[in-house]
Length: 455
Image (cartoon, rainbow, N blue to C red):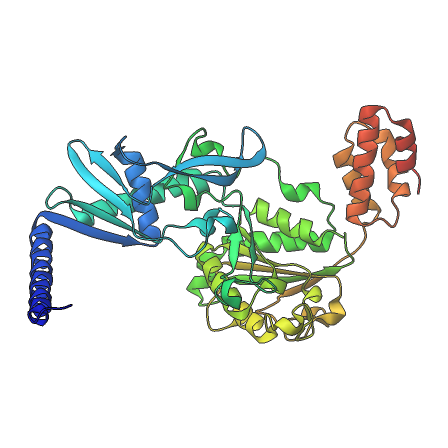
């Protein structure tokens, strides 16, 4: 039973609680004001957080106390000549203290992107969203610290990512056909990955390898294009690409778009993709290979804009006829997917695409919409999007002779027989014929050798 004084006791308790809550709120505000007079808090977002972490890792001493956190990164390891898991130490969620001499600095994560580790850890899939620095006021100059970190990070990018060459291949795919939590596909952003991309992990500490041993191997002195059998028209394309890359200032001085577009068509195996890859490798261009069948409009637009921050580069759209018949997206079905208008706007829309070499391949030229660009009286119907339309045919005798001499340089007595046996082969078929013959000689397989020399 409640006494007659119970309501007053409840009221008194509520009043005291309100007073304590108000007092605590004022006390906390007073503490924050006093702390702000003593402590400096700095928030860094985006690439700036990566730059700062890279700088802290390399230029300051990390405290050995506190929790540790590690992540496995799939990267190409040059000494192993394989893609392997590379263990790296990362900033733990609770943060870490760094020291410059006797001056401490506390770095904590401000939050990560929505991509979970189960989606795959590599490059942009595991990025730092923000970073918070806390230190005693007067210990560091924030502006100077940020500038030093940015300059140091840019040097690291040049030494570890660009000095060895800019060329790498990055595959870009989207969310079409993939179920996401909550039934929404639109929250799943397009992702791109490359086992040679070191830029996004420079802020972390590899445990076994040096960054100079990871990613794209140093380029050899051999030209990739010399390994291909090219006719005069293809060699003209190579010269065109070389002149395009060297003419940036010429185009800018005249206010002309500094871009080039090719449509390569022909039977499967005639060397369209191999040619594009060799041109990019010799010109030291990054290659962004877009999987159009899996991309939605917003995903393509976002990834296309990201690609343009890496110019000069190559955009590769392979087998476009498998996605679009004319203007119809036959790969999307009922999912919707990418629209042809959106693709055209990316190729030649409001946003300038200076520094872009566009390469589109198709096995069926008759399925290409004229708005994209098809041959007409020796010219493209849509220069500015596609400037050259070039057919790739099965190898002629001179082409087969060239490939045979490259694969079997020590067996010239077999070249003529091999060239005759490969009549009608595509480039891929004849290259495989030459390779199998060379291996048969290497392992003394007379039966396989005879098979390769038969038509």
